[in-house]
Amino acid sequence: MATGHEWRSELYQDASAQFARCADVLGLPDDLRTRLLEPRRALTVNFPVRRDDGRVENFTGYRVQHTLTMGPTKGGFRYAPGVSLGECSALAMWMTWKCALLELPYGGAKGGVRCQPRELSVGELERITRRYAAELIPVIGPDRDIPAPDMGTGEREMAWFYDTYSQSVGHSVPEIVTGKPPVLGGTAERRPATGLGVVYVIEGMMERLDTTLRDQRVVVQGFGNVGEVIASELFAIGATVVGLSDATGGIAGPDGIDVEAAGAWVAEHGGLAGFADAQGAGGGLREIDRSAVLELGCDLLIPAALERQITVENAPRLDCRMVVEAANGPTTPEADRILAGRGIQVVPDVLANAGGVCVSYFEWVQDQQKYSWDAIEIQERLRRQMRSALAKVWDAAGERDIDWRTAALTVAVRRVAEAARLRAIYP
Image 1 (spheres, rainbow, N blue to C red):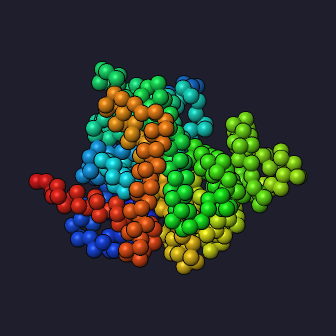
Image 2: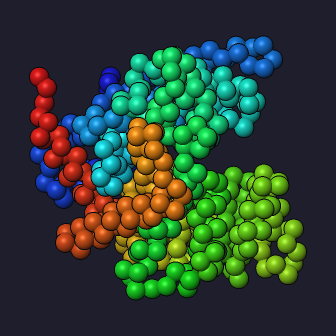
Image 3: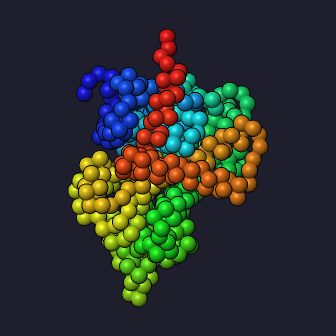
């Protein structure tokens, strides 16, 4: 690997391939391709944490800021064993395109700590979070870079992060992070925001395709913060959820799964494993491998788990009419081409799951203004923002006769490219 290209992971190559196709469609000049492709800043930190048993262990953390052209950077931080500089770089690039597509005044960022959060106590997680926040202070700030929750983190970690930064500057700075508990300046709608945004996009897409959401058979891979909201909302609307999975296993239910019952089971038992058996033989459910859920027959397949889940190996076996990417980067470029050849449409992540950063923006604005909106107002603002972005993507796809992913990227990249052109190069 060439020196200075440490971020070039498989996931980053996926993001780069998507950008290259979009740049070709736009006829983007070489100088703008150079300026928009690679991350502007990348920080790697190693820090010691004392474990509960007295041992001292080193942890590695990252923060990548993709572009500074659009304003402060915005993006979550995650705790997972696979966190790397390359993963954060790819996710930061995608975050830039999401923000541009929704016309938010941000560039993209992403970060995280490489760890296994399920094996850490609450005290250990707090010490990791506070030390990670302290290590990032040179590059973050309410007008520089605003973190948010991601995989393995939530309101609790955001509260610790907020407090650590505030202690360092000597006064409370609630706008340093979004996804906080409401009592600390957060919004109650931030946790379900990504899932709600996915549902709003699906509703809009069904209307444009002149079909009814209640008639759809749905599979959701991932039953965490995002997937559970999506499955629950679609179930409440009347769609038939025929497949669910999480880290503990998968469920197939050709006659439909009671999502409310599944959610109650997970709350009590910590995962979906055992739910099908607990429903009894008359429930029509069966346990399946968590990855096999992707191949169940359905109308809408919604990957809401990890990156690179739909690949060249399983894309030929997918049995759906449409993929809606609730996760970041769940479909590889090679799989994209296979799905296109099979006539399976893909609603891309930069559109479908942008609801989280949209409501994070609302929270940041509220904290800056010291004013808050109620839950209904937040939901309506989110719905309008997601529907507006969908309209732009739909129109771009029709005008250029391109797939929805490339259409979404052309809208976003063109906006960032124009901003970069106008700001020129300093000095």
